[in-house]
Image (cartoon, rainbow, N blue to C red; front, side, top):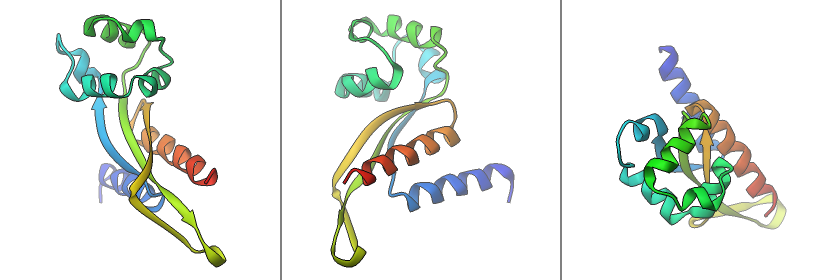
Length: 134
């Protein structure tokens, strides 16, 4: 197995064992390459403005600007990686250490990372914090 396949398998296993689902991933340099944002990226900004501002430490005044101003701001602040919407189920702890979960109720977050490996690591840390607080 080559190194890329091994890395992808490790990422998949970490997501699986930590109950994490990645719903959308956007590679930011592909967004910057076009005069208008991709539909997926625009949807993330419009649908999850609070999470978007938190992921990029951005003020709401920037988020209210035109797409090209937002792109220049992100690029100018060195955001050249990936933004992803991640989910993890609400886990119920039962009798004698039993647990159950359903994807019908879940936590979600928008995260930024410089690489896929970093994205998975951040997702694992975030999910662990969600599960610990339940």
